Image (cartoon, helix red, strand yellow):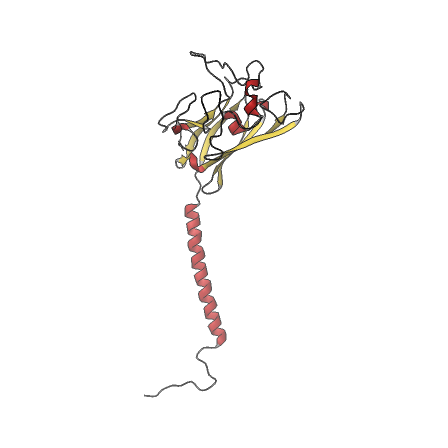
Length: 254
């Protein structure tokens, strides 16, 4: 049997071909890894869909001023612990003697406001020292929330971060007020008593230093300068995937 030997100066494969083969193999491996990673991102980065009916009302009194976000539909149940609510608005100052609007130094000046609400962010985000204690708002009402009440102290189940959004759940709150013992539950102290649209002076120790009630916590200080027709932008972000799942400009009603 003959044996074959390379003569001096001969090579089995030229260096150029060898390098090209290595590059091809490297490119193929990189493409496979990229496709795999892209598939994972697509699978884990899908954001849920959310449709809501949003109302923001300010008629100058605690009794008839509120915000509400009523869930119409979701693609999947969404834990509020995964959500961030951001509001923003612009209007003009209506009073320079309102403890709820410390930024107002001249009537008619343009002011901007809003706030970011996230479970565990500055929690609790209210400071209702005059109404039974603090809590985390927006408060949840409706489907799937085991314990819920209309007045402070509120149940842990209905505090933002502890309930899940499904169709039929409403997130809402109102300005601080106390209630009478029987209907019509008229406010006895707080926002809009004596002077409509202005916070009661007994609240001034807290109104200028931090968010006090459910409206200030979600809409920001000075929200009571908003009037019917003013626009509030409301965004809901799924913080797990970093995507906005609700973005609506809402006209204030009165």
